Length: 522
Length: 102
Image 1 (cartoon, helix red, strand yellow):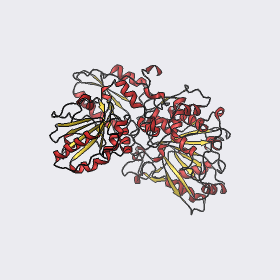
Image 2 (cartoon, chains in turn green, cyan):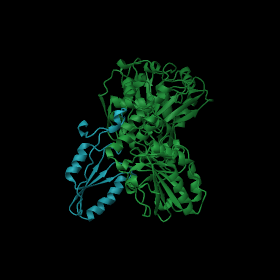
Image 3 (spheres, rainbow over the protein chains, first blue to last red):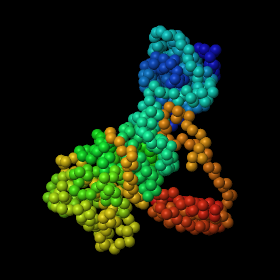
Image 4 (cartoon, each protein chain N blue to C red):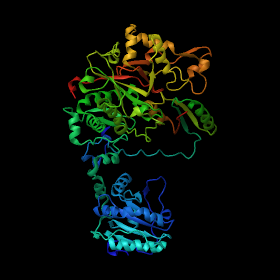
């Protein structure tokens, strides 16, 4: 059945073993494919219309073949993600495997073109080959498989046009560089291509075309370097930061905030290196203060921690994409987080300075109220704190503070790094009405949470606890300064939140001003 | 670090890549000594919990096997070692053992 004029090894010879990657972990062996009878290997390539024709026409038949003992495997000369996508799109119901350059399996089978359909018998002997789309030859090959299995009723493609169609060159048969160039052109599905390139955090992204990146940059010089992003020390050129902002879904108006956040996380005092590679869940919390919040539509009100607001979600995401893509902190790769957390995809909070009874975070940190400032803090996921019953500021402060008692770990006292409390407006109002300053609340919370060292010695605890006498009172925080207070959230509902720290990294809070020359409205 | 660049990504013509596409040549492994007797072995404590205990045990065995040891400690486990420390170990030691985690 071999169409001998188009290459391929001859019938009756032993079929070469496969050097391919399958969807499931572990090697794909020819013996497994033929274990219940015989196997079709359908060599295909994404770029080849004849391959698509073969996959579309043979695909729906695979399940019935499999039940009769004939496995059908599409052997792609493309990356596995591409193979899976193309197979799904074309209705291929058989197995899918992928070959990487230099396409050893295609070479071993002497392929000159795709599609090429090979029938392998149970003993691993090559029983026949059909090159290109050749409907009568394929019907005969399927009949041959049926005869081998003792089944006369294997489904076959109907004699619809086109009955004959030549294939395309196998990538194994052309210059490797040309093959690679062909493989890169998958513009038919840009969103999928982003996944294939690995330019994602696991969610769909906006493709960073030169036009979009140029719009993001505005008048900024893309060659300016902000430094090197750990852990792989990829260079954070403005162009690359802009590419991350585009991928994240930012509008150009957000870019100055993204740049300020990038400058902040790259400050060595932030220790992004430690945060990027740790087994901790550490994410990079971005807090925005000042006029830029309103100018670009950052939400500090209802649903302030998300979801629902583009500026908040995409600015936080852009910063994390910079770490993941430009910095090389790929989850499961150099990012060794045991669990991670959802906020690590990106977390950007705008403080509700207009509702807050207190000076905002950036003023506490030495900036003028009229400056727009980004502050980054290594942080854990938010924990909700409900309190609808406290009627005194003391009770409320006690409830808020003790909610954080198990932050990091139940008996890990004291915490040196900052815990961030996001105080909702109704809670903030109680403190305002009582005339409590921010510092008074901070000191009250610090004083409220302490336990005897003797009660903190089960399981993981600190050297500080071990060194103390059993009756010594240990505070939850090393000092009141480790308590960061922000105001944000909807006007109704008494729900505040605390974000525990990234611990043991020596990671400091870092603030950077948003460059005013770039202030653009959304 | 731009001078490390030896190639640009072939596919970046269609999009602006978020990756730093420079390809860095792999660092070759240092030659492995045939034995440790008489060699200087640096023992690097990165300040992870109980790393020092691990190095104590390793040090006693290395010393018994005839090695000369030098103990050094990183500033903090979560940051790369200071270049001066790396240079000192590279300049003085034949081998290095790093106690990584608790």
